[in-house]
Length: 258
Image (cartoon, rainbow, N blue to C red; front, side, top):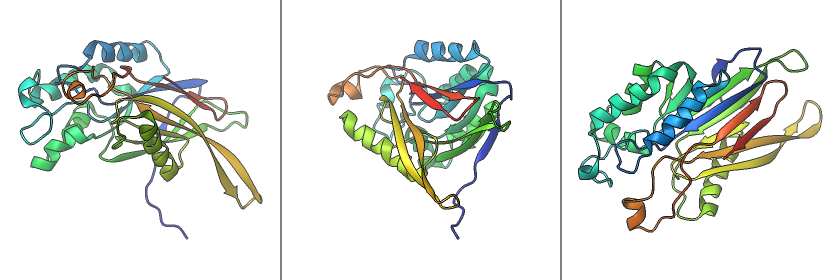
């Protein structure tokens, strides 16, 4: 018998929703001079204008340039304390739409030095669920043809590595999707928006068959304009913003647009 390695955090959306949008936001890097605050405000406004839109926050919301980090402490627009205050003020109007938060490597700098988790503090101030390294979410909405809720499994973690080329970033994203096997997989860190429609075969021994199951793997992109570190080391410019994930509430069907 297999051991249980994680349990889903369950969220029940309204039964009358025929669809829901999830906007995963990561790599805002507030505090860095290249942070495009205006862009993230427009995405938050898009969510606020729709009753069926929700948010997931996936780390590196604050830049957290401290003395021991790679980031330049002298170029920060505001100190870490002000970064925390700004993020809480920015997100408070939509806190009821935030389904969960995970931490990023930039916030982890403080945890490594002091033991304090900046993302956990922000989550507590907003009153939203926090998951340090990875989130397993079961999201139910609408009503299917069989009268039951339509449920989606969603896995989210900040992510890692990736290199300069899109292929390397896609490989890492696909690796995470293979590990967790969820309907929707979300990573960040690479600052590159990407959506991979994947298919996996799942043995169904009870019915003596193999079923084809769809997965949508998404890399969230970010809000840091090219300059500073990216310019010095020759990284390409990337599209600023977040993808949108649409979940059907009448049948099992997930799509992502970038």
